[in-house]
Image (cartoon, rainbow, N blue to C red; front, side):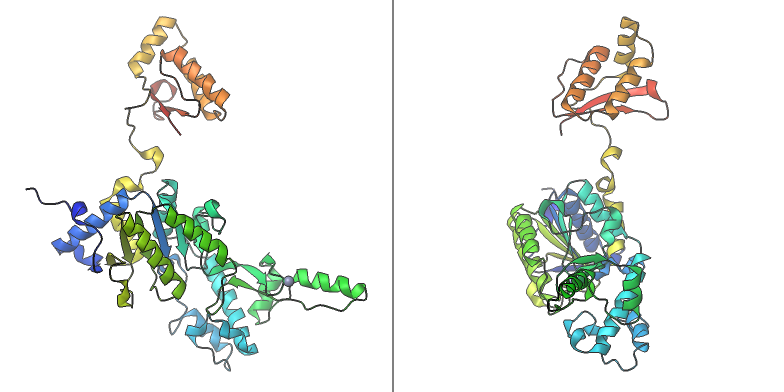
Length: 421
Ligand SMILES: [Zn+2]
């Protein structure tokens, strides 16, 4: 009996199998597993992605918790501050004025680093999966919004959002009282950098209006980066819950977790629910991170742990499964099930009808570029039939496309394919 392929052998595991990507070159068993995982990723159709700070390490955002990291640089400006690095994203920061100032200055510096950062191979991979309609959604712990550099829609509005930010977005400021959101103005930026919290414009205007009417002056809120600190509830928690519910119902067949240590309670819950849904479909859960998750309770939930830099794993996947990384327009044309007109037939038809050599092709090509309504589609279908003698009907909802070889120009139209959309 022939041995099972890596793909056949790879399935849900009773315990997490951990491999070092770097060992694949020298260890056949690791190579077999990494190859099998790559194959599963390539074949998956409904992928859930969960990401953390590890995917933004290569983006140019400096590590802020290390000795010479951003936080310690900021802290030098506040010698009396007693805030520890680990409390940087904790709501405890607002318990005293000095730590509030540390937080404000730190956020300005961090945002400035993010503005100069670039998206990484993982961000591009998530975009690719989205474009290929293989991505259900990406849930990220990151507040940097680098996904938007790849034109991925960030938000919590059901189907319209591709990326859900579980810990908020540093690029917006939000009033602590009226909850109105604002873009960062230069003035806000200057104030925050000096350690002061700007007052909310909306609240201020309302207060001024009331005062002018001789009424009691209400409280005025302050603006804070719109991020969710530890110990705080996510203001969009309900919408995020709805996104998760809808994704779990959509029968995900793969969960990829990348660059997070899975220590935060919210992400743990999300991963457990997603892993359960994936396993019910016979799918696998892949975890890419430099270290294994701390808790042993991941047994039976995470099938494979790949010890690797997240970008290096994506690049390795690209080498193993190049077809997965081809865009729709780069895929080889498969003539089956499609209306195909060969160049010879085209020439014969032209000779029979004494048609001018290039004109009909010009017409067709022009039509395809503006083919946005059923009427236009019918028109081009009719033109195609008259020029090429094609008898097949173009479906009214179909998309018709003329493929041409750019190097040879208009006369080298080699196929016409009708795609159902
Ligand atoms: Zn306000």
